[in-house]
Image (cartoon, rainbow, N blue to C red; front, side, top):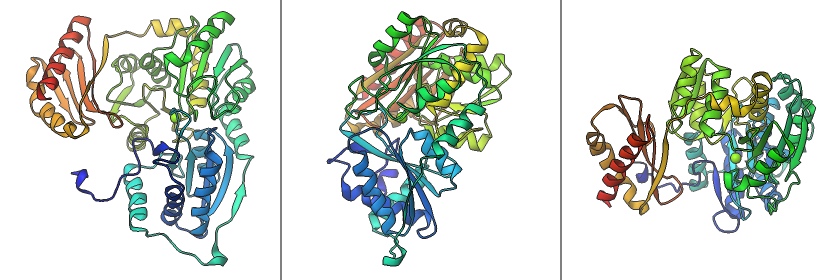
Length: 453
Ligand code: MG
């Protein structure tokens, strides 16, 4: 259905992203600025802009600023800040829009643009489609020379952010923390916040550098070997790693091991309690932990904006994806890797070593598999999966289509089949009570999909 819309898609699962000079051209950037200003209302409105540590950032900032000013809207430049600061500043400064210039965890040649509502919530797909339509139709607002927008700088809102963060947590400062910002946008502010919370902090890769000499910006296990070693060698209580724009956080436990993503999410969810939103691909250890605390779990599509939308719809107290993208709605609707780190540290300080807390959370065999396919085959495969795959299992309890096809069995096992949004794969994610059952579900799903190809 969506393929029938003739307007070219610019926004992917996380804003506009691509290689500078290839997908991301100055013309495109300027037009995004013009469309954004047209969308929020031109004269008398204001847009806050921040950027991460990439070499192309000032260039993108200037081009997008030029587009905004040309359409009569004012710009507040925040400088180099993490994504959550842009979300917070949009809210705090009562701006009409926040723009973050970042390619998050992508390598150095990439950059991107992500748009944020005044609540700090990411732009929804509908809002992004509207921006695309304005660009496609060249329906930009025009002002004459006397109404061109103005630029202001704001370097003080970041201190409001820090103070508000610190008043939102209860940390005594008894722990030793290693923080690895991967030369990204969290480099100054994340260690500063942790130190202001009274913690003993050792920094790794906290010099901003768009070449990412310390490690790649994706906080994957392969990129965090140094952090794991340092946590162990220094006897630290916890290690924290951020992605390139610090909207995400990954933790390393006191044994120098990466904290299991799903278990960490389950731990934090159960401590926050109430109603929690997570994605269809998260482990049911989240449900188990929430059940014990009398809480409730609401599932949504993969992607932080979907989590944010359902938090608002259901008035939830917390929401997150296993990737470490977590939203704390009491603070701001923008995912915040620094606040997430503080929350984990607060929990560890109160309840004991992270390794022990994670050990207490039940583990279930999880399989993440993928099958290569042509992009044009994805629709056909997903149609067949939807119609026929559930019949291949004997004890199906429920099938839902929130995102891809998720089949759950009577014993709680589930399998999720979804096309990758960015690569030529069909992804199979599943979880079961026993490894044997997990293998069986994987084999049935794999053989079915391979049978279509
Ligand atoms: Mg990010």
